[in-house]
Image (cartoon, rainbow, N blue to C red; front, side, top):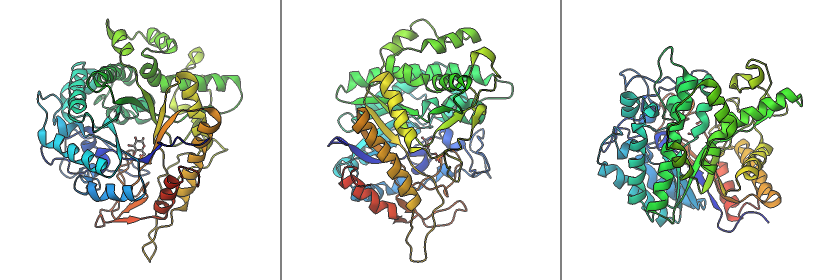
Length: 476
Ligand code: BG6
């Protein structure tokens, strides 16, 4: 009953949201380095290059580049068994299309992984976490150009060779499926996934499916390379999983929600089974898409994942509007509020039971080990006069979600390898570019206005999580 003895308790961040040092030691700009600051009401913008007068929060991050040793020591104090971060692609290949890697970038991660090992922490590494080289986006239009598949595989293989024996758990593209919601976020979501820089008049839907296909090929080829280079390593996909419920038992709503799940999560099907679900192939045929070329099916079939990594923050509900007729195609514009759930200050609906639902959804279809590599609660934290921070709301959120995953393990037989909550230390928000949307057990003294000295402090949740790990999830 309960979690396995070697359960990987830990936390997760991404290079671009934490490291800062965006142009240090030969690093090139990534797509994250041309995203401006926003907030809960103001969307981030993507600029053509780094422009004077704009504010780019990822350039500074929390200066993890220079503070990772002390930050990892704080994580070790909580008893972390695993730490998930990403390698910034542009530290290794600054423009993305170089023949040779940047040694200073490779050395930086050597040192970081050595530090983790010294602390008894297993590195769990994402190869691309919204970090496509700006050079590839600008020059090749990202994964719209098949040459980017080779550039990614070269980068991935360089990492597998260099960190063989140091890194056992890999993932290819962070939340590769976010781009399925291209209608809501437009160019932002496509570019964040490393797809494309788009212009007026582009057919975003067609571009999304084509560039996602090329990204899936890149992922499959990297997985194959990983298996060949380091047979002891495990490599997974990373899916942004937020289940879609029907808004009511009306059969139209139920079918609509089912189609939404296929359209949002066919990416995991390709990763786990090595081919597209027929439902999606029918859609491509209907739309006249011909981006699947000879030989692609074999590539996908040979690059299946060892485990499913996924993030979970919230769930959605959808109401059938009839806008796509008999196809029942999904549009995220048809989401409705779920009146059974409360939401965070950013409108993210809180649904711990939904996490168990998602674990079962994956398990029933793919029967693969899983790792929850992100789950957390973004909130405004208040520092009291005595310097303490009572973030009981974060503890409540995490406790309810950990209980749900414990039930999925105990009662539903889910094979769960680990849980790396997001994010053990306050970092820059990916969607809004804010500092004030905080997730951490560790407070970072820095805010949206650029005030603060970046010093680190422990919140109430720090001590709570330490006990969760010490009791292997028994005491929540
Ligand atoms: C996930 C991303 O979507 O959610 C992270 O993988 C991100 O990069 C996290 O930070 C939380 O989202 P946000 O927008 O609150 O930072």
